[in-house]
Image (cartoon, rainbow, N blue to C red; front, side, top):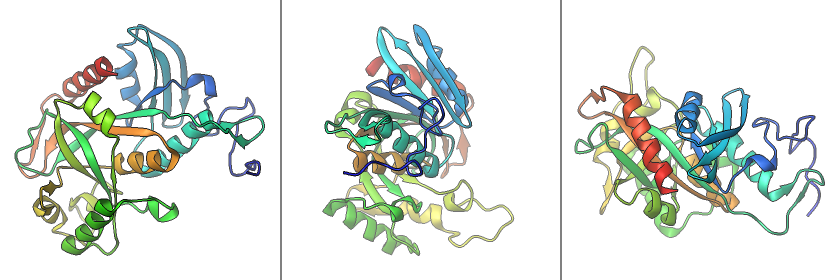
Length: 285
């Protein structure tokens, strides 16, 4: 395989990857990913020690130890576009020799755990609860630019969702890593997560601008295929699952349910819920 060009894989003057500004030594086998940069500090406050910090745009990184285990926590900001940058550069740090620009013959598999916030689509999902994402349904267009392999079940769901909801495009559907689901989310509500490319119209919110799918939230709430129902909205999970599959890593997404869209309820103390989820995840990895 030819060397990767300087314009395909951008590096900083110190040899670190362009956006994350990290070196291979900063990546542990288990990576916690969060959206909000402030949530990195909510995670690392529980570390025994923090050995390294990097602040670069929305990509904040802390590396430290929790009960003797080395963990890297990185924020991605909002959206699957940032998840693509995060995952591409994370993979480059462990599977590409940054000096020779050649892909390493022996690949390393990372475990990536997203700790995020989300709004419930079903009435029986309580605010303040935790939900682990089994399947993710991507309403964004990121995978139009990749050759994502989907199995027959995932492809069937993608076609069925497009048809029944009347989407002007076919979504992509990807299942998360079952071993991580069992390890991290064994006592959580298991759901199927819709990843939207925006917060307002793509999640059925109406302010002043006219929207194209005014019944989107209702349609997603009612959608099912057999026992497959859609449980919650957010903006990153499908990107994590798809990029992990493309690059040979394991990913799982756990969600703090801060709102129930069907009941119009919002949790009273979101930070308390998020920190409780963080502690639970740290104990299980």
